[in-house]
Image (cartoon, rainbow, N blue to C red; front, top):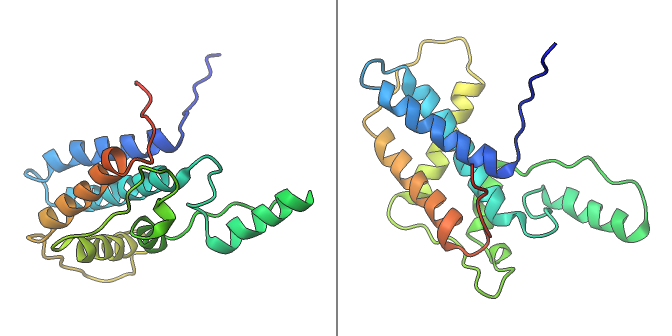
Length: 172
């Protein structure tokens, strides 16, 4: 019997989500429902790139602050490590705009311009509405979605290639 494995890591999550957004965005012309999948993929990719940019050598910055602090305490005292819990999307976004990003001498933090700050917040809100969909009838105006996606792509470009914190992407 042949075994099959899905293998992933933080790089794969960010890149494969971006690839999924590209695949699904082509389908929007045929069926508007694909906007849902583009939003979900762009959100996952944005989150993935924030994790990559915050990761550093210890991997604690993308975690909730209290979990990271507890982890460090347990590490120093030789105790039992807490369950690692990724910080929320909006908290990760705050972190990439803060001095938390400045852990290498050449590191840069993200400074949103124009509509970028609103777009990341709206993307998160839309993602939540899709993931936690309540029984209802919902009509979503999609004319603003391309701008939201482009703004989020600009964030990913900065985090992946300009902030100085992502050392390399593995060759696939």
